[in-house]
Image 1 (tube, rainbow, N blue to C red):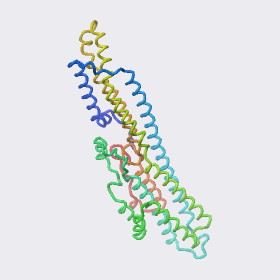
Image 2: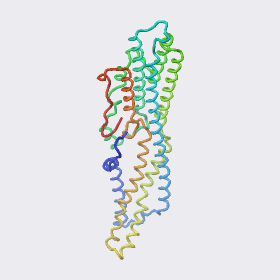
Image 3: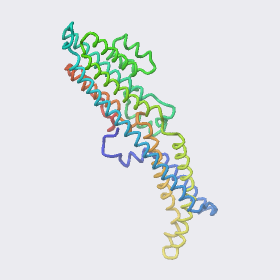
Length: 353
């Protein structure tokens, strides 16, 4: 997630420089053929070009709106995870007690149970964010050259260390081996949570109604997890994405054939009064065609980069930062030594991951 006010003009120019140069070169070639070599048959009536442009505008607008909807829904889901995680920590602190126990546990044992339950929750968030960072076949934005340049400037935490190494900090060896043996590791962790609080209920360390409350919190976590997995595992419909890409390319190919003759005609009408301006006016079509092509292509590309909000780009939901923030909150609630609590992931190039 970008945290500065806006992308600079330099950022946008560098991000789209390849396409911009292609559009300038392509339009320049068509202009030379039309003006210098007299290929005046390179002329397409402006009406069909404009109609295609209108269709592209509607389709790309729909695609951008849908992409933003996916990003915003993902952010709301992880916002709900923040709230539910804090609720889990609060209830664990207050509901695990000797109040209804016939065989009271020591304070050290109670604290151990609380720590295990909270650490296991942190492990659940860790497993979930690693699952969200897993590459899908339709997540290809990291393959674009300029996107790779951004990726080289920022570091996705899930690509720096492995899930195994992270789970080691929160789980026992037995639980870690159990979780890693499952396909859906975050689900396995919630099952362990439910099993643990049931055992505490049977020992009387959790009141029956408190047990139901904690089970409701786990149910909410399952709901948030399922919603997050739905966005991750179900892409923006490929038929719309494909049609938007192909129509944008067709439109950018046709633009010079519609605009260059228009500029040539305008230049001819100006020759009598402004000879030099009219004579060379056709060459102004090159930057204008490039600008129009750049605008439509950039809108379409922005939609593609926003389709997958967990891919790890600078415009995606900062699930690593959110997860680490929750971990800090929960471990502070355990009154741990501040030196033992990890710091927040640093921003790199004004991007939160």
